Length: 368
Ligand SMILES: [Zn+2]
Image 1: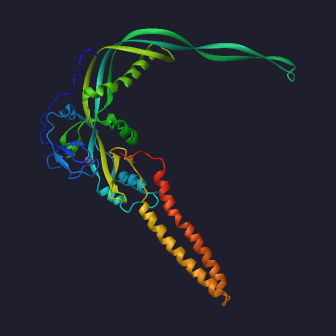
Image 2 (image 1 turned 30 degrees about the horizontal axis):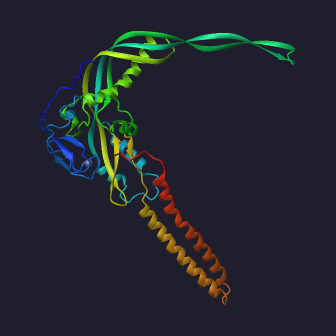
């Protein structure tokens, strides 16, 4: 790592695109002029305002070179949304498939790809399998004496090795956003082999999130996977079965950066307090990241109805018991009504407890 990383080609000319920033969450986007939505597609809580990125993050001054197109079919999107909504007890009134569908916003998330041509020296311990054959003797009375059994055991012989490597590692992913790892965990991988050259026609007027990190900032994140690949290559070159204590010293590294765009949809539903709960949808697989929440307010309403019913049954039952002293047939009606009232009263707690339990269960953390 003798020289600073050559970053992507700088281009401060945004052409027909306009940089906008969310006044609530500070996410920054580039949208074709006239195509920018009013609300931020990340938080749905702030308006998108034009801003001047001059003197801002150097990650802003790059143009996308590759994109993965949106290939999620309408049927698959519908199926995924239904799956998301189903099974939520006392779901918020706003959590409807048609709302999620109507509010969805397509845009791209940025990621860096780097081809790294590395020259390095390495040192490691290589482990080679070898077999040890021994014999176990045991005395068995039923078999009339001693029997011998061959035992074959595989062991590892460790040898120190060192060498040099000169290799090019293509398409190493490097985060362009601080949230990259969490988003990848929640949404899954994108098929990088589907990437194609970026063009505005294929992007169909969709905007993209501007990188939060420059290529230079992202480079340290590439080193662990690079070392892992080099480690495995050296093991294979040495025809070893294991490798440990791998160390390498990079002499020179040439980097060729590519700015790739990943397709996502975002949408939202409002919870009891009217706060937007965001969902992010993978633009290829349809996998959804977002918080599934029950509505304590709706559960409370059902509990209130059940509690009122329980009170009425109890009042009816008590009246029946009082009148039953003089009119015999009303006595069993009173007892039954009291019992029904007690059971309904206990059942009135269920909706509240169920909603509370559902919201407390461990789930994927909300997107931030
Ligand atoms: Zn926002």
